[in-house]
Image (tube, rainbow, N blue to C red):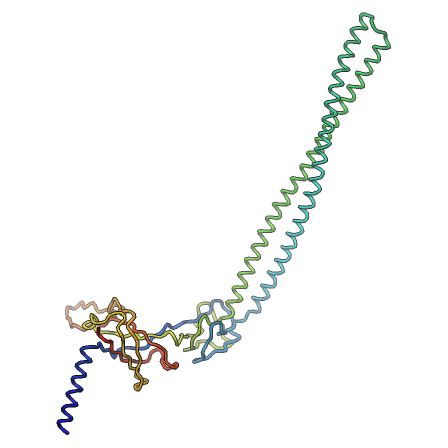
Length: 349
C-alpha cells in the first residue's frame, strides 16, 4: 500500500509538473459581458414598466412607456397646421396658373393688336407723306394759276384727312402699347405670387420638420430593447418621473460573454492569440468548458488603477504585475452568467 501510495503521489506530482510546464494557469478570472444601460431620452411620467429582473427581452420589446398624451396632442396640432399650409399652397398655385393663363392671353392679344396698329401707322405715315407732297405741289400750281380753286381745295382736304388718320394711328399705337404694358404687369403679378408661394412652401417644410421631430419625440417616449438580452437590474417603477439620461435598467446579452483573466507578467510571454484554453467554472465543477485566447492586453492592470502607486518615499517592494487576457467561451444552456469565478488553463504551444 505504501508503494502504491508513493507511486500514485509520484504520478500526481509528475502530472502536476507536466501541467505546469505545458499550461499557464489563472484562478483570477471571471465571466464578463457588455452591460447595456438603458436610459430615458426625454422626461415624463412612467405609465408602463412591464419588465423585472431576470426577464428575457427580444429586440423591440417594450421596456417603459412614458406618458405621451401631450406630445400626441402637439403632433395633431402640427399636422392640422401642415394641412392648412398645404391647402394655402395649392390655392396659390391654382391662382398663379389662372393669372398666367389670363395675362398670357391678354399679353398675346395686346402684342398682336400693337403689331396691327403699328402697321396701320406705317400705312398712314406713307399716305400722309404722299398727300403732303400733293398738297405742296397743288399750292405751287395754284400760285402759278395752273389749277383751279376747286382742285386746290381738294388737295388741301385730302392732306388734312391724311394727317388726321396719321394722328389717329399714332393714338392707336400708344393705346396698344399701354395695353401691352398692362398685360406685362399681369405677368409681373405672377412673380409676386410665386415669391409668396415660396414663402408658404418654406413655412410648410418647417412645419413638416416639426412634425418629424415630434414623431421622434413620441418614439423616444416608448423605450424599447435594441437587442436581445436579460434584465439584470431595474431602477424605476410605474408612476415615477424620469428625466433625460436617467437609468431605467441594466441588461446584457447572454450569448455574448467571454472570460477576463489576469495572467502574471512572468508567464505572459507564453500566451498568444489562438491558444486553446481549458475552463473550469466554480459553479459547475463537474463540467469542463473550452475556449481560446482572443486578445492579450497591452498594459498591466495596475495602469488602470484610480490611485496608482508612484512610490514617492523610495521604499520599493517588487510585486508581480498582471496583464488582462480575453478568452472566448460559448454559452451552455444559459448556465454561464457575468461575474462568475472561473479557473483557466491556457495550453502553451
